[in-house]
Image 1 (tube, rainbow, N blue to C red):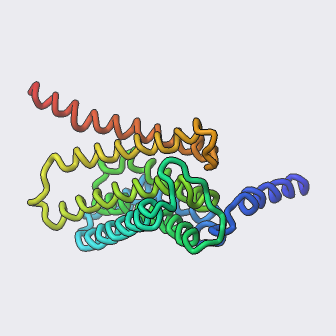
Image 2: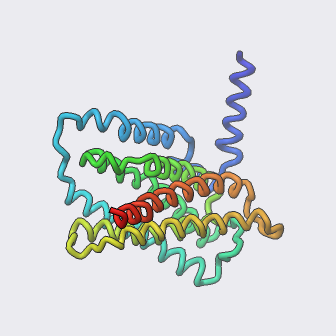
Image 3: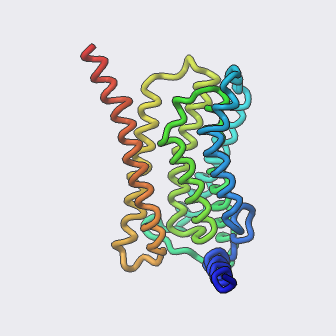
Length: 269
């Protein structure tokens, strides 16, 4: 038994410490997987069980002001990351959009990169509040498998990316996703502050933008597997692509049901 425990401990240290990037491995919520596992577990249990049970005999909470502040924070953080990627990496020519290896040299630019990768990971944890707000407002129809799976998956990928491969080719994921989120939370903000401005077709095109995002990311990570000269770790693509393809399928299925089948059904009626 002692040998088994010793082997498990040795393997854990190898995976958790030896394989990790030392630049980010001491960052909050990165040094070991237990905090993010606990956060993901509590989130899942709250939105699927504890939250609905708590709200069973209560009226929906009025969270308008809280959600307005939350949306503004999301827009500012997403816009900040987009601006940082553009000005410091892509437009300046320091990072390639086609294939970018991870730079391990201790430079000022790379210190900025790893800190922004960590910030993106933290934002994915903050994103979990979306579902909490749905539950507290009794919008249970919004707590779909797609919604919950997507949020949990992004938290897990954020942890892995920050701990093991901060920077390089994977930065494009955060860049594209931050653009989408800036647009998406702007829509949410307008819909709650100035609902009379909102047009029905906005939501449809935001879903199209999300689907385009997943297509671009599949191409972005997929071509790494067929580019021998690309020095970015290929195991990241093998891990990321199945998740992203599944998410693309779920979003496409949602789009077809929500905007194509319903439209055709309304026409026949």
